[in-house]
Length: 251
Length: 218
Image (cartoon, rainbow over all chains, first blue to last red):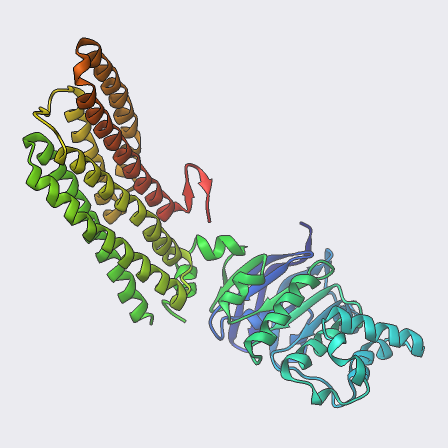
């Protein structure tokens, strides 16, 4: 399996706080990689370094390298708008824009210059279908997205992310605000999407990581303690700290 | 953290140890009953087999409940699944001790323990294998487990010797056929007891390494 994203000796400081400590990790193409660990371990911080969402944080210092298809995304010549088109993100709380379902999905393509209605119609339909939402909303595309259920809103956010044709999708605890059925729908969706995209997900739900992730990395106080195939990490963890965390002995 | 879970796992271990103890008693009693042609003791083994079967159900139920409520992973998962697997072997050892006891109970006339020379050696070895396998499991002692796995070849060879002896006895005196079949069946049960002791050792290997016979199971 090819490496899509590679972090090399990544250190991140929030002021004095050393939030990521020399993290090196390969994210494989067309696979789901999960980041687990207790709150404050650095897993979300690490996720955000993958499309430079941390750039806006004050007093942040990042050293080391993150490459996307062997190109350093922290190179000063990198256009972050293009980077974030390639590496999309879905957050913990579904955050549809206060506009129609259609306009939510068309928002990204419009920003990137697509104005043709027929073309936009096609993108909206294709993205909603890929996010397994189309059937549920086909007859009300022009009604407010805020009227959707939490699970539907989150799938809409995934559709919105897919509409700009990303290569990588980053998800930060995307199901923690959802009920079990909506959670399963998102999980099923991610399993389908990995055929076309590279997916990295932060989750507090270890059962979720074991259900859907091909690879899992365990973070603890800024350190990436263990990384490997999910099945190996959850059956025979190599580091005692991983074993203690996943079996609920601390955290 | 996870106090209840640890308590439940501890109960599971205590039950496994108890069941192992009951099985060892069954084997020792079976050998005594055979040696002394003690039909009262043979009957007791058959009656007590129910206790072993009950323990199997208790451990299975406890394991299912742990899987349902705790969704064990890593070492916890291996401990619970191993418990589920080895209770079957322990229960089968108990059954085979009871099967031999049943043969002893129905002996007609004298069946001296040493008639078939290699049977006492088989009985002794199978008793050692069961004892050591259970002990290794409780102590998580992989090196003893590996030794027991090797011992199985000796029991298998002894079974071949018994077969040979039985054939010779029948050739010398064809009236002893029924009597010889009893001995042959006892030898087969002892050989199977050795196999189950090996299974316990192999599950210990899985428990400690996630592999069995060099095959990764998890």
